[in-house]
Image (cartoon, rainbow, N blue to C red):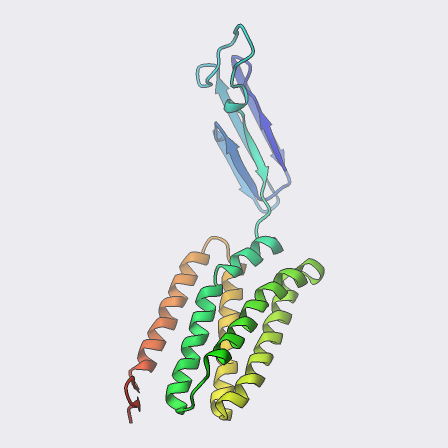
Length: 224
């Protein structure tokens, strides 16, 4: 939804007062003054005929009136479609980190994991994002995220318990997946600080992986 004005007068003044808390100002002119609050916003524009790209009078019809239009859009922050798309952007990173953990477990546990098993785990992680989008249309984003995360975590943990044959590693994997899902969920709830929190979190995760990988002898197993 959007509302725009065309400054056809010598001096065009517009004053808006709305109870919509998330405006997105758009067009050829930004407001001279505006105040955005939790319960709404107000904004004012003042456009002179000298600032627009068409004259006060003309002959013919080929005049770009709408090129000088200004106004605002009703922005919907973090609806379930936008949140689902944002979460999908983390898919490659999420799957890569999970594969890396499986590789470390394979090296430490000295139990080979077949590429097909990696693919099955990757498909499960991918299906999470499909579940998230489809379920969020009926039960809301937060509930859909919890259901999808729980379902895929349980599926991967049960499958991995037979692959790894180690309760300790299985519990570790379950905790790690829970932390990763929780981390992404936290980022998705943020608006202004999402990039900052996400970059710091990824830096910490990479640091932990680097510290943990120091114990691995890549040619012979685990350093004692």
